[in-house]
Structures are given as C-alpha cells and as structure tokens.
Image (cartoon, rainbow, N blue to C red; front, side, top):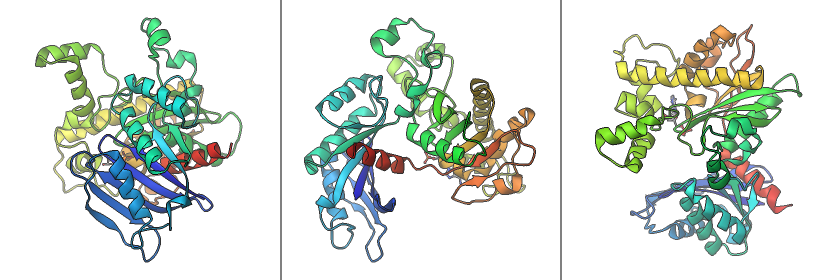
Length: 411
Ligand code: AMP
C-alpha cells in the first residue's frame, strides 16, 4: 500500500511516496518557485528510473501536484503504473489550534477548522490548504489526512501553556503555547525511550536543532513542555528567528526604524537569530567555518582566523539551548536521555560538544571521540559517569506522517 506525503509551503511543495509494507521511500522530490516560474526535482529510488531536475511551469499548487503525479506514473521517471496505486495522502499541517489533539481525516469540517486557524499561523496554513485542495482535485476519492505539528504537544499542562497575559486572550482568541515540530519530537523521543534500560517514569529532552529549532520535555512519552509558543518564533534563537526576547523591543525597533509592527515582526522572523548576530549567513555550516571550527571534529581549526561575530552567534545559540535544557530537567524532575536531532543536531559535532560543555556542571558528559563519528544513524555519545544518556537520532517527520495516515484510514 502506497502513501503520498505532502509538505506544502507558500512557494514550494515537498513530497515522498512510501511503500508502507516495507516503510521504504519509492520516490521523493521538491517543487520550487510555485507561482513564480517553477522547478521540479524528482528522485525515484527504483533502479533504472531516471532523476528529473528541470524547470517546469508551476503557476499554482494544482499544477505542482499534477507535475508530481505525472512524474510518479511516467515510464522513464515513475515508480507506480497508475494513480490508483496511491491509497492515501498525508499532509503536514503546521497548526491545529485548540481543536486537534491528533491527526485527522480531512473533510469539510476539518478544512473549516484549518481555515479558522489561519489567524494563528497566517504564513503556513494557507499553503497547507492549497496543497490539500490541489490533491483533492487531482485525486478525488483518495483519503487525505492532516498530521499536525502541534498535536504531540497537546499533553502540555495548563501551567506550561498559559501565558501570563489577560486570560481572555486564551479564552476568546486561543492565545496559548502550542509548540511545533511535534512529529519530530514524537519520533525521536520514542526511539530514545527504546534505548533506555527502563520503561517507566522516562524523562527525555529532545533538541530539534535545524533552520527552525525547538526543544521538548517528554515525560513517559508525552510532551510536558516545549520552547515554541503560539507561533514558531518563541524559544531558542534560530537561523533567522530571534526566539524569546523582551516583547518591548517590538515597540522600540518600530520606533527606531519608523516602521509598522508587522514590518518589525518581519525583522524578528527573517533577519534575526544567528543571521542577525553574524550578519552574513543563517546556515550553521557557514557560521561554524567562519567561526574557525573544524566541521568534522567540532574542535578549533588551528589554521583558521575566527570571525568574532560568527563565534558570538554560535555562543548565543548554544547558551540559550543549554539554559532551556537546564529548565527542562527541572520540569521533568530529572533526566534519562538528551536527544539531538535535525540538520544541526544530527550533523554538527561542534554544537553538540559546545552545548554539552555548558551542561558539565550538572553532570552531563559526552564522549568526544564518538561525538565526532558521522553515523547517519542512531548514535550513543554518552561518556562514562554521565547522569543521563546523550543520543543523536536522525528524525523522520515524513515517516511519522505516513504512519499516522495509515492508522487514520484504517480506523
Ligand atoms: P534542517 O532545517 O533540519 O534541514 O537543518 C538545516 C540546518 O542544518 C542548516 O543551518 C544547516 O547549516 C545545518 N547543517 C546541516 N549539515 C550541517 C553540518 N554538517 N554541520 C553543521 N550544521 C549543519
């Protein structure tokens, strides 16, 4: 049984086609520059099938889905004979608001609730809806499932999700902590728990460190706190997002620049984070090289001349992540495992070492040699005498979406 997973952005659409009997990827790809001109990268996993990487006219998401279906079923590039071999479509939906505590079969009511959630995620939900509508038109009758980034965090207790602002904004306008990257935190925390020598009272902190970064405190497999808030802007500093800052600075920056609140928010979303401090790039690979670190070992590259602001950007990031880890040890009442995942967490020995160095005082220790291993798979980097395990676990949000889709359509 094949499940197509769709992750639609405003001008892009990522897809993966899974064979769910073997949980293997048959093909994956990316439509870019939708609404501008259009480009499609399509990569089949079957031997003898060709990769497609060319400009394609993509005026809307509807043409993007048609182009994807065309490639999936074509003689040269395809991995299935006809469309009927796709049994269901799973959509990544960024925000489920207060209504969705789990994944949902998409119907008119679910679409209406998603439309109502646009006020909470105005950049993301319209794109999710465009992906859903395009698939409904291209594949009528094929069940579509929405898997929400926020759903895993629905177990967060009231004292952790209520903001200290007038309560009516929660009651009347749904302003509360929701949290994001739920599929990733769910996936890696479940694997971490499998590698513990206990099954009860498990305490795990998951660090999803990528372009967007968030941490979650996971007790007995359930999220009890997370760093992102009503939007994905809160929490640790990110590639271009500021994370948690004094809210008064919105007013101050708007005054300095003589711009609106919306324009100021754009600065905090797109020009801040490590990019804001370093000034040249938001990509951690560029920043680590500029700061004079060896990408393979995570240690100083003796031949490099470190750029001060690149170094500072990394130090600010590491410090904030370590501080949240400390606070989540309090929230959990201890710690069994600390997990690093996503682009930076999986691939940067430097970031892992620097964060764990800040945690030495509370007894978290990693093995420097194992930390420098590039395994691409589960890696235990714990050193002897550490109070908790430290794991590197590659995330797989698409597989979570495909599995949830299967579960929902078989209910
Ligand atoms: P993601 O959003 O999970 O795709 O992660 C993207 C981030 O991971 C970017 O900032 C990349 O620079 C970073 N990244 C990917 N590979 C490495 C690496 N080898 N070392 C440091 N950062 C990396």
